Amino acid sequence: MASGFQRIAQHTFMLRVDERVCGTVYLIEEDGKRLVVDSGDGRLKLGFVPDVCILTHGHFDHTQGVRKDWPSVLLHPAEFGFEGLYVHIPANARPLHLKTLGFGSHQLEFLHTPGHTPGSICILDRKTGCLFSGDTKFADGEVGRTDLGGNEDELKKSLGMIEKMEYRLLCPGHGELELKE
Image (cartoon, rainbow, N blue to C red; front, side):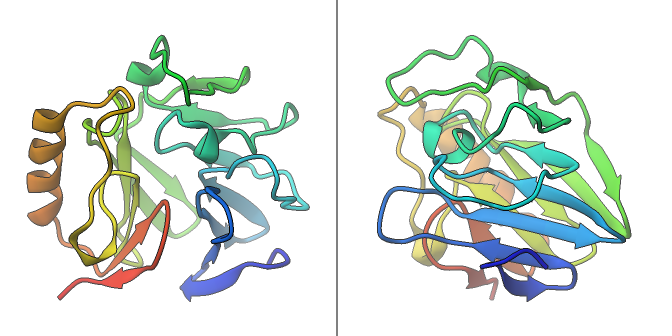
């Protein structure tokens, strides 16, 4: 396991920094391969090059940690061309056109959940029941803001979709984890 990460599920870890706006970085590590969900604000030093990086949306606190030597960085197509004060699209990011991705024994499902940004996504790990929700949904009923290029109506629809999903652990882009009741 990479330094500083805390185990939250089988092969699944998190690195959270609370003293600044930095988003939480999640890591799935299995059979010598590493996949990260979000990269933080660029001030974290991961100490490794992930095989795959999936970005939940294009705000800098989730994307600025991407390094030029990362071989596979994926972001929803709606984020490309999305302009805003806090948007940072890494030069090596490519459009995510997959609905699912097998990674080791994990089956990741990508769900377009616009509202916080046009291309926000959530990632459901069917193996562990972890839902990586980016800034769409947080613990304690909190939700992502829409005043940074988002859309309130789209966010409500996305939250409705999330509520119908079967997941065990909410893993948001900021703040605490939450077990689903």
